[in-house]
Length: 393
Image (cartoon, rainbow, N blue to C red):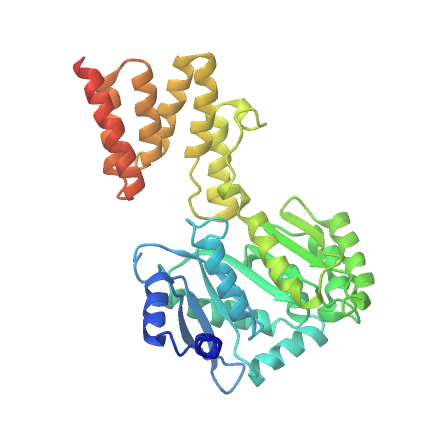
């Protein structure tokens, strides 16, 4: 008996009692896989074309009208961890990471490597930036549905180049992540160029996360990191939304993962965070909320960031004090986003509270018309039926 039990356990461990085919089919049925492609980019600056790796979100082929954020990382081994992190952090409704097209560099491409060396060693060299702006980004944008918002992600040497790009051509990307940047020994002349270039930075707002830790491998860079931090604090204009973070007590190879997660949360916080009714903006009223979200949509992100949830939060607070004022804010929310099912549902409930069931029914039906999600359709159908019952009384 014991012998048979041991034998069965051994087979179980080796996997022979399970069907790999069934396991694979089960995994395929439950895992939403990203699509990975090669993008061939030619350049006048090097002989052989470069094969960049493009990782598309799982919904890319399904949502043919949707445009996506772009993240570029020039380290060839970053694709795996970025893809996995993005899949986990975006699958729950774009939260906290908006669905993103991830592009990573080829491994060992001599031409691209030479452009990096020139950027690092030759002060004033912008050939790498020319390649990114004139050849790489247009190749990506022409083939894929990008929405114009771009992130440059980098670790160690590539983090130093992320800062170099921010200083020399800030308009190329909207956000820059620099994890454990190499800055010593005049790396890409970042520290020398930073004071003047930060002080004269213009255009739309840019985001920067610069991070490091006290690990053994980073200690030799900490003096330069501190110097760069001081330069940023002394010279950055309001156009740069900068964040400096130390992940002390953590491992060196963990740094890009920590920085990416932290940076993504900070970067998209204004998209996801609902303004509290007593916040500085909301306390000024619905029009101030709308102005804030216009700024986010037109200046900070360049894609629409709806004000709906923050308007609904204000309307709920106003309704506890004055039902008419609350109802007015609900109406503003619907006017600002006429295709928002949540706005129509909120307004419908406000009308129902006021005993105006005909208008409640109208807007609950509009809420239903603007979603096909099973959870919401069930909820709105139940509300609609309840309003109709009350109207008949």
